[in-house]
Length: 183
Image (cartoon, rainbow, N blue to C red; front, side):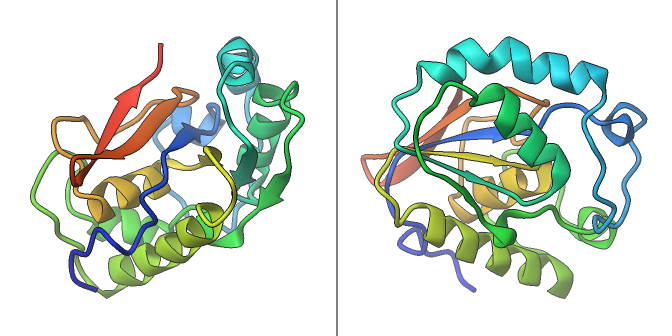
């Protein structure tokens, strides 16, 4: 997979990483069939961000099927009366992928070894499915998905690491993608 900005439809969208889990709190990287819930802080984060999410001009919500993302969606997007679609390809990567992905920082496009490539291809499929919907779309997923998006879109001038429950606006302008946190 070479760097091709045409792979992801050039439709603006919003991204929200799920709320905090106990594994996030203790910086534990696990293989993600472990479907863990939000902790009390994560539920509070989702509730705190809900008024901002309620005012976004989204027409659909696409969510990882993992429990922490679904729980975040149910709290943070409670007032959005738009279609809610679970997309398995937006699920988190494994601990092996986290270990092998290039560092989370602004850099030239690179995909890393085979497990990273497979993960990025999966995220690309998920994004193509999500962005085929009328938008803007709100994507609720994971830190690894956010990293893959930033890498696929070659985002510059933006810290690729994102905290839990921080909404981000992605837009394609003047031939390149931009990302900006919403406060």
